[in-house]
Length: 289
Image (cartoon, rainbow, N blue to C red; front, side, top):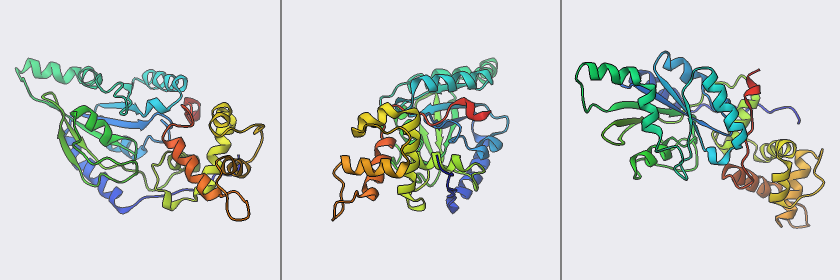
């Protein structure tokens, strides 16, 4: 693959979110950090880790229905080996969501024991839900609450202010806006976040991004790529050729017969983000060295 372009996006409201998180951490018992199961490392915000400190934390590998299940198992084992509580969730089917309260009770076993010793009953635990934009925080809370309590859309930056949501008698959730960090030290991180839609499309070159994604898929997930776009003999082809092939296969042509690579790029990125190309994970725990 060619050199990775540098992608940066840090709108002003994200600095405000960091302040909100810091101010509200004393009010919560647990931080539930949603990560995109397709990019568990790239969607792990180092700012969140610094802010949380010693506060109990639970990692949710969300959108696991769109990730490669074998690689997701590798990530779960990786976090467990580090002593970090982790679980898979999928807000579209609800898989894993029902188990969340039991997992919270397990992670906060000491807190519950202290409450029992003091005779405290009926007090809900407070959970702060954090993560990068478009990772599915609001969808997760809506699933937990059983109704549409928060604004949800398939684009980053919908939740702008904190929102408390009463999930049930045992759990209150604080939904925080998605937050990135001021600078991606590793350009590949910014690129993977752009692939998944955590970075707004209007700050990236969509055609270049689609070419980069196609090159990755043509390596690790060639069979899924070829099946989706009815391609053959793609081995070694650069991204721009793959994008042209996709455009032609889809009948996306400009006057004169050239492939409309702009339309093809939007289609490829949308279909990847919706899981229609296949169950794909863009990084394994080996990325951590």
